[in-house]
Amino acid sequence: MSEVKKTSWFESLSVYKDIRMLRILLLGSISGFPWVLIASSLSLWLKEEGLSRSTIGWAGLIFAVYAFNYLWAPIIDRIQVPLLTKKLGHRRGWIVLMQIIILLSLLVWSVINPTQNLALLISVGLVIAIASATQDITVDALRIEQINENEGKSMAAGAAMAVVGWWTGYKLGGVVALFTAEFFENLGISDYWQATFIVLGVLIILMNIGLMFVHEPTETDRQAKQKETDKLIEEKLGSNNIITTFVAYITGTIGGPIISFFKKNGFAIAAGILGFVFLFKIGEAFLGRMSIVFYKEIGFSKGQIAIYSKGLGWITTVVFTLLGGIMAMRTGTIKTMFFAGGLMAITNLLFAVLAWTGKSEILFAIAVIADDITAAFATVAFVAFISLLVDRTYTATQYALLASIGTAGRTTLASSSGALVDWLNGDWGTFFVLTTIMVIPSLVCLWLIKNKIKIGAK
Image (cartoon, rainbow, N blue to C red):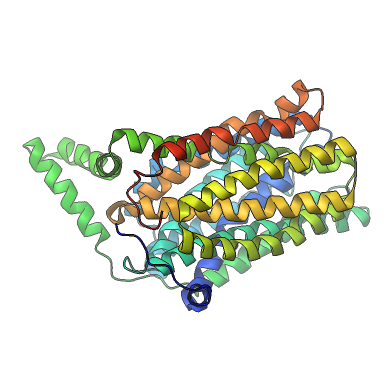
């Protein structure tokens, strides 16, 4: 792919005026909101119920399902949801089904006691994670399908808007969750988190109403091409029966995207890409998994956490994600990722300083703002990067595969974050220094392959 010609900052900003960007913003919000439930809300709920840091950290293993959603991505591409697909469309039908499952899960959470029913609580959290991970497959596919293949600038802008939307759902949803929980707690309601989940369920209903305004293309040749691939594989097998049809289906929908990826890049470069994708945001994930526990232990209230970490953080994230999108369009995704990697290391050290100096609202605000700036640049570059790598014939499956590999690093390894803090005897400063060191391996991988990756706008 040829290099993308640089445009002025004004021309780059004008891309965001497209009405499709607003639809992508909503899709991103739908995707980010479940993380409020199984990250911030669940972690703080367990903390306030007296459970240990290790338990909270290991509970985060439910995020591991995001690392494997590519396994059922082909199913989401092919199978239609009874009634919903016919009424709403293939993509929107799947999204609404997953939203219904999440809503029902919140209703279950609203009536259980976490200390007495920890296994049930985590199981319901797992259901939410599975529904959310499944929803992400469809959201990402619908987001990419909003943009035509030849609209490179719009694709980069769409990646930025998707990130803004994700953080909008996560940050503003977190503001609602934390302030609502604190409000109910101040009213003297003992089960204030359970009551909060009812309020969050209302937000899910509102998101589904907004989803009805997102256009879904009615004409697509995706399924026709999938059937053509199946037929070619059946012909190679030399017979036509139930067994060969099944083998052709599995090979065409799962094996095809993987073979295409390695064939396009070559084994060595493909392995380097996968290594980078797996490692890139591990340090950020370790910090993020324990951050709200750290804020609580150092002495900040839920209201302060909501203002600095969620409300102020959302504004910062939105602004710098849009700027990150423009930077990616003008200088390339790879340079943007090197820049973001350096910021990650510096930001994590700020949290170490906060841990060593003690509670300080000013330093807290600085650290949170820096972290959100870093996350904005890193995430938009990452989303644009893997969006450029996918083959349009296998958009949903390849994107889900690459995103899942990235999630695998952040979830499986970061689940030990609480145990690491305990092993360090609560030495938060050393913990944050270690998360800084975790940034380095991914940047080494990227450096080794940066001149050989077959994408435009490097």
